[in-house]
Amino acid sequence: YEPSAGNIKLDGYKLSDISPYWLRSNVLGFIEQQPVLFGTSILENIRYGKPDAGEEDVYAAARLSQSHDFVTALPDGYATHVGERGTQLSGGQRQRIAIARALLKNPRILILDEATSALDATSEAEVQKALDTVVQNRTTLVIAHRLSTIRNADLIVVLDQGRVVETGKHDELMGKRGLYFELVRQQERRDIQEQVQAVEDVVAIKEQQ
Image 1 (tube, rainbow, N blue to C red):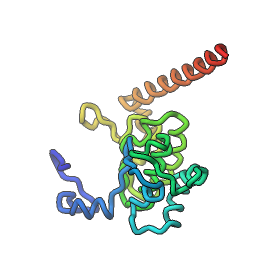
Image 2 (cartoon, rainbow, N blue to C red):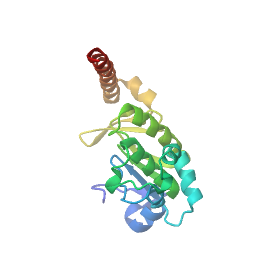
Image 3 (cartoon, rainbow, N blue to C red):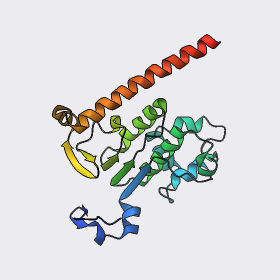
């Protein structure tokens, strides 16, 4: 997409002057909310990030993405077919395979677009652990409503109605007690409500038994 105003630059070069194909092939990695998996093996789904990669490189990427243990526990291991769109895997497993694919490609710039927003608490914790590995030693742009994923960012940009209203690190923005502060507090209240509801559901199930 072209910017509606101003310029986007990478190392001083306008994005519009850079070949999109070269950019996607050599610079950018992308992990989205609903990762795209193909109806083939786990090995080939990871290798899609770098088609000429050897199996040992695939295994190394899987270990870093917290995928290796669950994959090797499957009857067919890395030869396991994931089904169309990865339907044979859980949401957290699909996301970790997508992370392994990005790691194999080893992009210099990584974009995470709501990478954990569709996951339950357990899966989110597993995926977040993998993401903490992925973001090291590279520029990472995180797009998120779930604010726990951005607390450690070097720079947080808060948007409201498409406009930048606040910038800074987590502690700085909390100190300002502005929109970011309110969003964090709202999310904390929702998290507490969800935890209480989960406990009540467990109690209700035990009472029924």
